[in-house]
Image 1 (cartoon, rainbow, N blue to C red):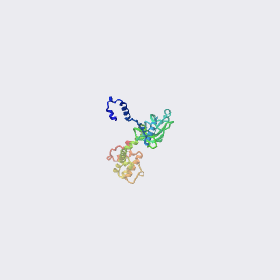
Image 2 (cartoon, rainbow, N blue to C red; image 1 turned 90 degrees about the vertical axis):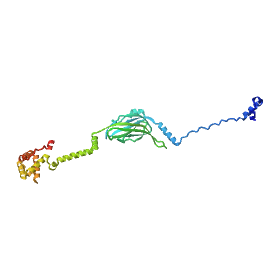
Image 3 (cartoon, rainbow, N blue to C red; image 1 turned 180 degrees about the horizontal axis):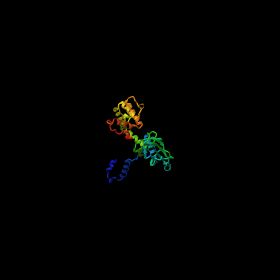
Image 4 (spheres, one colour; image 1 turned 60 degrees about the vertical axis):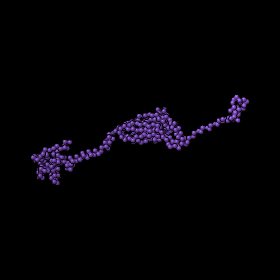
Amino acid sequence: MLVATIFLSERNLGPFKVILSTLVSISTPTQITTPLPPTPIATLTPREQLEEQLLEAIRKLQGAQSLIGIPQEMTVEKTYRAVFRISKNNNQLQNNITTNLPPSITPNIQETKTGTLMRVRLIGDQFYITPITPEDQVVSDDTYTEWAWNVTPKTLGNLTLTLQSSARFNIQGLKEEQRNYLIKDTRVYVDSTLEYTIKSIFKDYWQVMLFIVISITGAVLSINRVYITTGLTPKQTRLKDFINSSFSDSELNELCFELGVDNEHLDQRNKLTKIISLIKYCNQRSMIEDLEFEVSRKRPSKVKPQEPDKESVKR
């Protein structure tokens, strides 16, 4: 019936106009608004909750001031004290953090962050570094906290020591976390000592030095081999050889007699030992020139010009 009414013209509706409006109104469905479901609240997984705790702990780190005390000049193989101090209290820093420092240290104050538990390390491959305090310490709220090391340079030159300060976080259920908040490189000039220089030269050139010593020793032994075996200098050895080749046993006895040397004071095992003992006897009594004079007087044609005695020249 509703469809047929639609094709009627408005002029012919007449009294049916009100009835038609009512029918259309009844036939049109009413729209009902359905409320939206509530937005779900995001929930964190257990892992995310732990990570959020870690981030919160990092955000709660406090500003602090630190003191780096590393000598900037050292001597090789000598031990020095290096320190690191950190303070949460600025007033405390100004009043006490610079007290009782070793004389060789010029304090270097740096801005940093600190937590409850800090780890501080001193690193340098060209140094022997011995920790005096634990590397992990709880930072005090009332005074500064100190780390200390004994530092010994191994070699010479401009060397580097690196100080690393880290905050540690222990959240139950998470692996321990560490955040670096201060990494400071300090240049250290290391000088030498006479003892170290000698040791270094010997260490680097010991083979050359050994060769030189052996060569010199061999030369000295070669020059003085006769003196070592007979006790005569090279010049006295030449005199011995001349007397041995130019004088017979009887002439040797006559030579001793003219010098006033009793044969009882000489080694008479054979002719050669007698000549050697005669030269030594005259040398000990400042008669060596008399002996040379008598030999040259008796054998003037055979005497050759004597070269200077090397030992006499040295003296």
